[in-house]
Length: 493
Image (cartoon, rainbow, N blue to C red; front, side, top):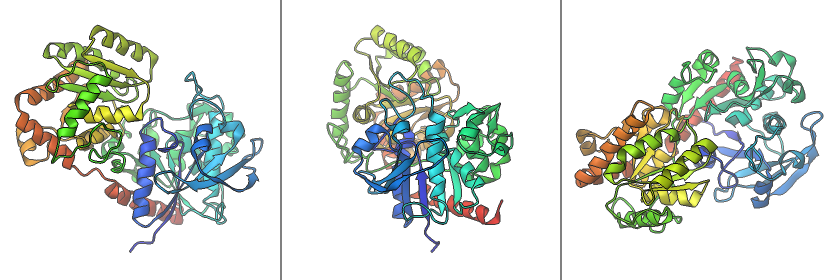
């Protein structure tokens, strides 16, 4: 049996302490799957105000200097609620004890000192990888997640005391953490690092590029996205770097936390159900119609969409699709928040279609469960999607996904045809063009099947609900990546 590993996840957010997107869902579920496989996995994240208030932790040692000219920090030790995974909060009140979110203030403006806030996180993460470790524990592998942990591999590379291997996961290449070049001096990285073969990116210091360049191994959150990011179309300016690192790049499709997302046990639903007994789903639909001010009707096709309201997620394609499908008496339940201009457009759309288009702007975890359970169809028309989770949730909840064929959406949804529905492989509908008409055409095909072939629709639902989206297989893939990274570290590559 392969040797079990000590792994530190360095992250900016994790459910249930703090969540702004899918990253927070991935972290605890993957950590728990690795623990179930016998590994020693622990988490490090910033001690934001609300996180510390919800965390039953105790001080671990005294305050210590992390970087010159930055405030001293200390660790708080505890366990992640609901998962019992050993967790450290990085306590540094001047940087983290403030209102607002983890990355921005209450008005949505990025914190001006984000470079310092997340540099501190990366540096302390690297300290766990030294021979002495921190708080009596040393990591074999330091696993940084997204740009917030991008400097972790750089600190590890430039510190000869660090013996741990580094792995860096791209959850979304579009968010890069780019800051003025002068930041390099403030965060304690050598001048030699500020070059194209380093962390310099068009005259700026890039946390994302640091992670891509200096980590021993890279992962993305789906095989298709791994193939896409090395192209100019999807590489977000980093295609050249990723092409250079392609030999150490692995795509692993995210899984689903089946304790949190299971319609048979989900306590956030008004009624629970399973593929063998679907009556509860009908009750969830009526609840969803009520919550969104929609006309009640069990046979009216109801399309749901939830997530960040951005053009990346394809929200701007909805108005054209809604108008195209209006003659078919289709209902919509839309939940999310983000770009103000898009929010205003959705508000106008809802006002123009009272009783048919329901809108809730903002983040609501409980309501998202009701929406995914109560809808008949789930739309995800993303222009790009590294992995996506909600299209997996929807399948497990018997809600048929309609998705654009990109990234993890292409890896997790199988086109419904007469043959694929019958043989059990078909689970949803896919389209290629990022356009309103293409989305409308795919949704129209789903609505037609819902109305005209209820036996086929029931088989399609059952196919999705039987799909295996657990974290066991992805965790095994990450364990293999960790061993590859350790081999790279030993070989000095």
